[in-house]
Image 1 (tube, rainbow, N blue to C red):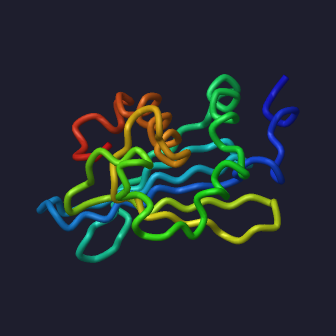
Image 2 (cartoon, rainbow, N blue to C red):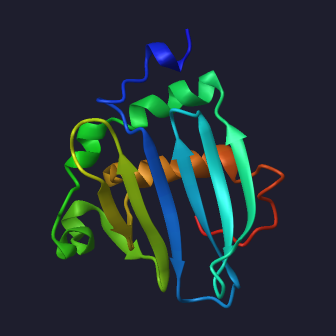
Amino acid sequence: MGISNNFEPTKHICKFGFELYDHATLNPQRYNILCDLYRKELIFEFINKRTEEVNEVFGFMLSETALNSLLPLIEWDVFEEYRDLPFEWEWDFNNGHIGYRDGWGYKFWCLSESGKPLLQVYMNCVFAEDKLPPYERLLGWVRTNYRHKKQLKGRDMFW
């Protein structure tokens, strides 16, 4: 059975993105990682920092296996717990903080049909493996499954 039997737009994230912000390097490009579960696609777009023009786009169709492995990681209610947390939350060692992304990070966003508005989180900190927020686990899934794709090899990507 395909994702249509397991994917529930009111229960799962329907679309998500990781938008890189980078103030620490001289890399002339930044990139976005975008996923549309309706279309079953994951897109990496590389953007000229100076002109904001999209230079290259690489898209990957998500297989049924990939989609089914993704479903447990995109349950909306788990992400909703991280809405509007105070700035200090991610810097608290009790919450798993073990470091930070120095001069770069991601703005994570996601949508569902839960009736809740767009959820956005700035990913500045690094967390212990046993306390990873759901957006960090999701980025880990993308990294594990796509960083070695030939279209992305040799790219200056932060993970």
